[in-house]
Image (cartoon, rainbow, N blue to C red; front, side):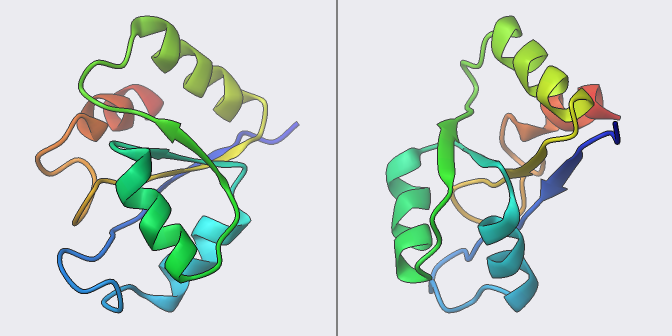
Length: 102
């Protein structure tokens, strides 16, 4: 079985139209999306008619949550990591997951 992929997907900082075609495609193809706030990411997904499972991933993510995500990647799942605005890993908890997934 192939190892999965953790996609680091940048989201618009202000205008929801400031998103790349590639980001929209990836968000539509992954098994689930990790996001800081499902309400914020849900608006983006709705705007582009993207149906994907949203899972909350924020500064309070437990060790168990990290382990489950890493296990899902080991099983071949494709997972997108987004922040509420901008690129994950700059000033949000995504940096911890990125370090562990390497």
